[in-house]
Image 1 (cartoon, helix red, strand yellow):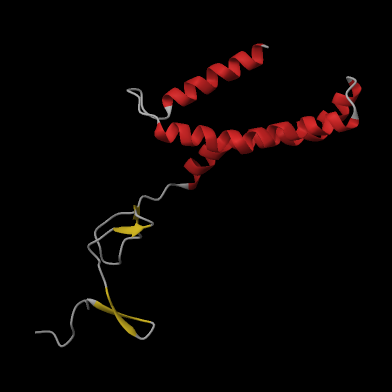
Image 2: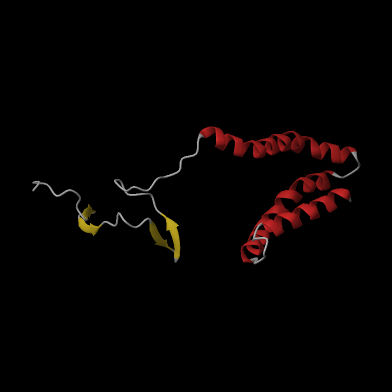
Length: 138
């Protein structure tokens, strides 16, 4: 027999004994299951994405941000050049963020509660694409 116990099932936490559960990889948080970091010594693998994949995923959002970086400062003067007043030209810049503040949660909640044979997200994405196309044609 070894003089040391291989792995203790008790851990000292704040001066009190606390049981460890290395087998469980799920923790109940707010009534929902959430993944927990694997305990050292477990055989569970954590998938780590390489940086180049993360950069590839972020590139489309970067291009949108760069585009808005150029459009933003020039849109109010352009609206004034077209004849809009200063207040209306400024409010035009606020229309997108205010609309997105309300639209995002509404579309998200609708998508979460949707039950379709095509899935929860596909019908919402397709509807948004069609509505965006129609709005662009107006």
